[in-house]
Image 1: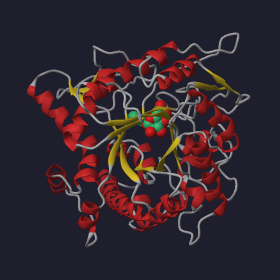
Image 2: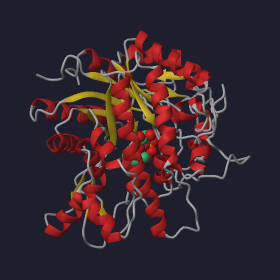
Image 3: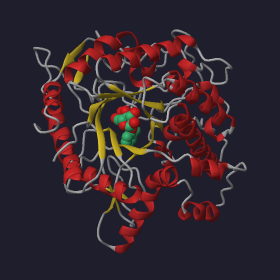
Length: 476
Ligand code: P53
């Protein structure tokens, strides 16, 4: 027993967090290019266009656009069986609404995916990882139905072009993050909804729900088209899985956690079952949302269900039905600190058993294979006098999570197809825009303001993970 022979060990990144080269070779501005740098407790701001003097970390990333061959060689040295990245939509369609794609952009990903293949790494490609051309966001993002057509065109173009290079596709990264509707960043990065101070709360929510419906249609159309392009394609959805536990066994706490979990499951429920669950239809009705649907939408959603589920997993949460005090990491209604587990410096509560718990819950709910496409820990790190980083805490984090994956496979019988460590090389943090929130097994010498040599070096976890992969998960 243990990990299957063809288990996809690897690493994961996203285009806007590492490529840089934001305005090279015909690329248009993407929504991430106008996100300023933030910090823990300091939200990133969305500026109106590129404002001189602001710090936009995603514009430079870690310069992977120019260094990918050297970086890929390091991934190969770790023995990666797969590599997850995303396609930057605005490299292919700079404004999103062009007739013809940008050939330079298409060529870049061709070279990239060929390089992965040549190194024995199966590409795992996210179509939209918190990205769309800025121009489309200005049109209203996914709340505007036209954007469905532009997404479809983008996705069909790249699926067709890379049909012999890429087999695993993910439609939208962590599509359920936007259920944190009160934040500015998630509706923006999931759906291209630019905050408008004139909108009242009901209008904001209405737009987000409309965007969500449109994304269900968009994803289903792309799943169907992808299967026509190449019947061997495996096309999945991608959910941020943060299990929400009741703070106590008080029935009200249990029910509160159950209701909040629907915000996570909703997307799986529609993507896998191909229909809207009653709890959502009732909610729209109760809260007065009127979602515009075109004739045929429900048939499209029913016909375009996904082949597998992919998830990110970092932490769990606990909630109480009572009024509770604020704490670091507080985000959900009634969220409390879990006294049984520790948190990272950014308040993310570390819970390896929670990973096994979500794998079981998802498999029992959907009966589909599961790909863990993100797991990892963000840490402050400074090289020692020899330039080395002994990141034992990262090794502990990854080890304890991989042990739980193994249990889910061996004991629970969950078909887990792969595991990719998030930010296998240090990249720009999505949530804070920091460089110093590091996830990598490879260190990148750069700071939050873009100073540094950008030189790469292997951390202790690099050697540890190499051994994990070469022993197929036996040597943890
Ligand atoms: P950063 C919240 C909860 C779970 C996953 O995040 C999340 C977030 C967003 O902060 O995002 C995913 O860099 C996302 C990646 C991101 C990674 O987790 O904020 O898919 O793009 O970098 C880690 O620490």
